[in-house]
Image 1 (cartoon, rainbow, N blue to C red):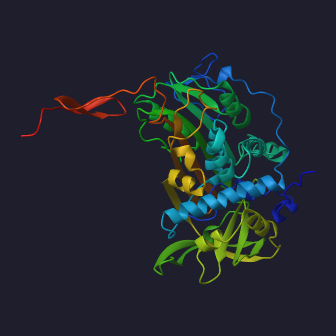
Image 2 (image 1 turned 45 degrees about the horizontal axis):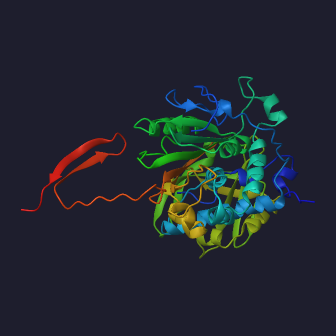
Image 3 (image 1 turned 60 degrees about the vertical axis):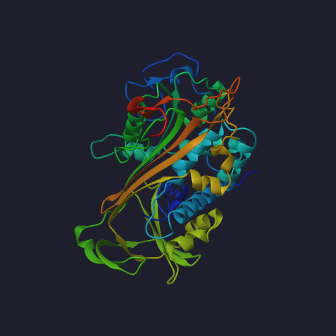
Length: 448
């Protein structure tokens, strides 16, 4: 019988704190079916230019588990730590950083449903679970994000039911003409409630995707795709938005400018917020505290490494189970806490990081994504991630978006090799890939 995760002290005290749910924490820095213009699922709708295919892919009856098992929670947290540590090291291992491993995991998990052979095996190894277990774990997690009965009954100041502090949305964007396997799309709908859109992949497609991300992150992330290139065939996108008010907001008298010493030894003046907290963290070479949000489910966990140790070294020393154990073992002690008021944003392309983590095949000509399209010849072209966080007297607003781009590989099967020999005069063009408009046109007729 599977063991379920042990509750945190905050949960044992009557609130449902969930360390895994915090999307930012740790460090700062053509398918078949009828078409319709009205998406159903996958978060807020896309611009009218996108054709929704979601109506032709009604979710099957997938029953979500009541909660994650201990093994699933450890695996997801292991991936979160490993991804953060590898990404932080790739950016130099100094200064601030910000990442939402949950967002990356959702986008990659959808993609993994279309992987086969060694490509799938490598992705499962990096993500920490077989794709079937991963689908079930992420589906179970997402199913718990709605407001609880008490929160819905209490509502907000206007008497309306309060929405969940953390919201997830997923979508799949398909180039017109690409034959996509229906079971792949069905898995995206069943387990991720993904909205499926068909687009011409012209100059307006990036705007359509970015508009969807902007709407599903409450405007905190306004762009995840810059240019849709001629080889781009699909985008799998996740958006995360978090808006949590503190259970006990800071009063004006609790905020004062003070000195904050950076990792390089330089000092700067920042507004520091003082509070008395009731959950103390100690272990693994760090001390810290847990500060709850008003909905009771979420909390901010702050970890201060021991003198002579950096936050990066601290996080690199922890496994998923060790981090979860540290949070779970918080003691009911009074903590006089100081925390800076801050705002941070970060963007990173994760292909190199994920390849180094153990899934290089997904990014090359040898990738096997025949579960997406039986025609083959597809690979991951990019994994773009952007995150934002703002912590102030009233609470925390945070958002992230992850886009997995799928392109046609140079090894796409062809009936017969072609040959072009530029051994006589020829014309050449420099074109804008987004519009296919030529910027330069020339003729090469030998050298003077």
